[in-house]
Length: 455
Figure (cartoon, rainbow, N blue to C red):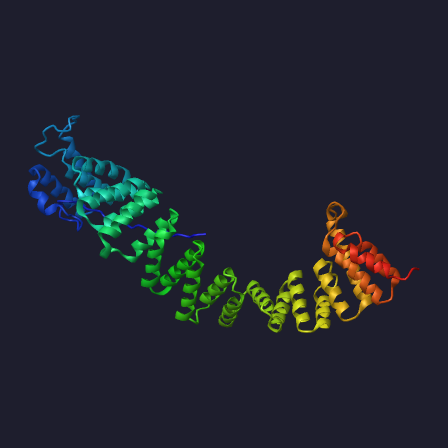
């Protein structure tokens, strides 16, 4: 499952053109001389009030100036004194922004860009207002228009991220791709991060891979570790197992004391079916850091699987002291059996499951007793194993067209052989009769009964 984190947007575009008080004023130098004199005068007055943080008074001045122009429905009606000038709307909207009053700010700034679609600062301030109003789609459009007006790659980036926040995948990805194509030298790592997140959200992991590789290479510290993990996860999710193996191996060589890479290498090797390399990686991981109970059980299982029961036994024993688990006990008994320690395996069963009713454990117990030539208790264990399975499954579920499960039949057959070895003919005959009810064991059971004494 992929996890993405959207970078926070922090907008600082509060620009008041022609008032001489804002570092974001990109039009003041050229626009002032083109403005009607009344507009220049009122903007100067409003600017002085804003410098004193008298925003309400500045708004009153600007609204009063607009009111002097009267109400008109004619868009192109002559306005020689500039009562309806875009700069008045822009200044008014920006005053509202200073007050964090975003809705009237948006209304005024919409009027500004409607009158002057090339007004860069108005587009930026409108983007800010739209963002604060959670209208991310409109913010994306405004940043896009600001980029068209000024060709600042940062504005294009904000357009991409705002569209992503609006869950508009295509506009977001289009802006990101244009950013990488037209401004490759201006891309910050944080921008590339958000591009990756947008790609992954759109299920375009293949396209995201080159960007992830670059982030995993160019970042340093914790950020690098984060993107290295993401790259490895993406290889696995894309079924690029060989690439994942190669990369995980490289990570362990680059940082041999970092435990997480050895754990990752063990995981990838297991997915590849490479048990011995997985065991090696997990063993090194266990040397580098304390392992969980689940990891200890896996380490024990791998040791048993590759034929190193000596290392598996203490791991199983420790795990069983933490939690009762029939599977762990079964594997521990198998490991002891492989070590030629059948009696110790039976002792472990008595210690950890004295009232055992698990069919697999009972069968292993019986096999161990038989191997130790303890035939009478072996016969009893086999019979108990068969009876327990019958109780657990129920006779109705156990039979299928008159045929019962092979494991239950084998238990009865072995009970007959063990009883025969113990010279208990009656018990042997009873067990063979039971075994004959099972198709897989019927022939062997009938042959055995033919050899029994006729008593």
